[in-house]
Length: 473
Image (cartoon, rainbow, N blue to C red; front, side, top):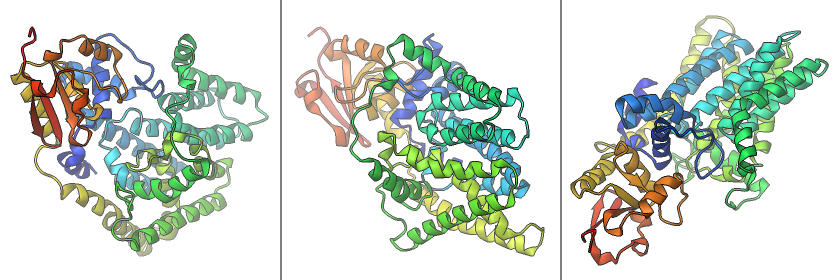
């Protein structure tokens, strides 16, 4: 698993994306004494990784690999928690299989495990902790008040981290409360714990007029279209059976067959889990997977499946059910059959899913994945430019990599994450502001001076416009 991540970080997957750069820049803001409750410009999602990275930023400065490894650390933690969940459900071997499948993750999930998106890998970890606590509560004839309070708090905290996790949190809470419906203290303990877990978000919204309830930018797609997208595109993308263009890979025959077999394994695992267990907890995994897609489809923005990031919502639960099925096929004894089945599954997992995913990235590895960003920084330093404007996808990585030496704004059509930075750049004389765009987003019309007053450089897949006139001219 560590080798997979090393190879990924050396490949184009190691390139700092704008959303990751936001994570690092927000950490710099935290060090400056500003403590955000939600992502700037979106009014939801806890910038959890920014708080984790802030002390690292304070000691080491801007470090792209360290920033990305936060996600890997959370992924490792999620794998460990999934082991304990599997052990609680069926035994240590189920837990070990589930943890191994998650740690040796294929497809888009392998990319997400080295990508510092706010509250994705860490949100998955907290959601799994809530699931483990729910299992413990359901396995007890009279669950303790602290356990129920902590479960509610974890559920509320996961909701604060990202509302998309409601797709798995809601069925967890419903099952826990229904099973303990005669325990009045269970209801108020879990509910109050949930409120406590997301209380900073609730308080911030109450003070600011509930901005998190505002409808985000409209996204095309109906409820049924989102459901079909999840089943047809998102989870195949998560497993590595579709590429970034959502085409089956490799070919159009074998990947759909593998996907059907994976889903059949999940269903088989759910049946085995319900039939072999005796506690009410046997229904928890079924409830989560049954309710997940219908609840996910309530969120308009989740329809985007091209990078597979929203697969983190249900991916570990699919693997958990799959692990139960694999364990059942392997048998309950330590014999040649078990070794053979587990060995075959591991080999197929690596050859059919993990290997092709890794190959796609390794084959396109060509030196430092962040060479373009660093080359732009060198040009800015040579020109003594500390203010930039342009494409969201280009300027944020440059700002973070500069270690707070460069301040960035974005042109009108892009979301403004840092309003103070935007105002500072917009108040700067035009001759002191450079513009950076991705080649595909190049927009000379948004330059503040006539284009002949800039020197244009093509650097990698970016375009840099450096002003060539004196600031006082």
